[in-house]
Amino acid sequence: MIPTIEAKKSQIGFGLKCPHLLKWRVSKLPLREQKLYTVCEEAACPNLPQCFADGTATFMIMGDICTRRCPFCDVGHGRPNELDADEPRHTAETILGLQLKYAVITSVDRDDLKDGGAAHFVEVLNESRALSPNCLIEILVPDFRGRMEVALDLLTETPPDVFNHNIETVPRLYKAFRPGSDYQHSLDLLKLYKERRPDIATKCGFMVGLGETEEEIYALLDDLKAHNVDMITVGQYLQPSKNHAPVDRYVHPDEFQRYMDYGKKIGFFNIWAGPMVRSSYFADRQYYGEDCPAPIRSKKALAAEGKLGC
Image (tube, rainbow, N blue to C red; front, side):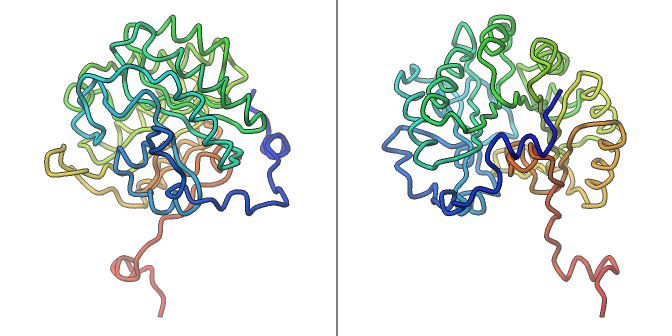
């Protein structure tokens, strides 16, 4: 069972009397000196200025070169470098320097490694907890294609506080947008981890605006619920460059609200959906059970919809 919201807040010291500890600016930290990367930068996340100004970031381990080439993703692809044996320690030192109470760790796909990089995740978890024992850690993992069992064994023995894996899109669009990945495999990864560690929250994110239908999104949410996922994030796909897959449509905020209403109806612990929502966007707040931040609407848009008063 996932702890109650109040239990979580007590566990991590929510409401500390030293809020200034979280006012560091990630952009001023020696990330490059520590040879660290953030997915915020590598994936050209639109929330980067907001999160960096708030002193938060999602660390991307195992380098900045992915072995997959998904047409929606801005992370570089090709042959990765050897793993940096000092990266777990450097990551832990940066988390300590920020004095974070909640950290998100993700990675590129590493199909070149026998365990898909699971042991490296474990090292980062161990090093980070040794230096920051009160920091909760969410990991956003790849699909560990062909290496699921060994990865599950490692991450079951050394669990995070949240196990996150993005399914990205509906099954009909997998061939076009997730080459080398499998929809059912991703569902199974989430379900099998939950079966092994029912005490750990599971989480999944996906994008809209790639060509899916609203009915397909409801079916995807049903699948995620059937595979015992606890938390969901749904965001608008934005084209990183002209060389990436084009945006099929921009989803209206009312449609995002329908997805949240449906998710709550079928029983997810928490579901966030909105144009700028990403899998690690204010991840701590979602873990605490807070509602999704409302999207900022321009006066022009509200007036066009007749929602702006005199």
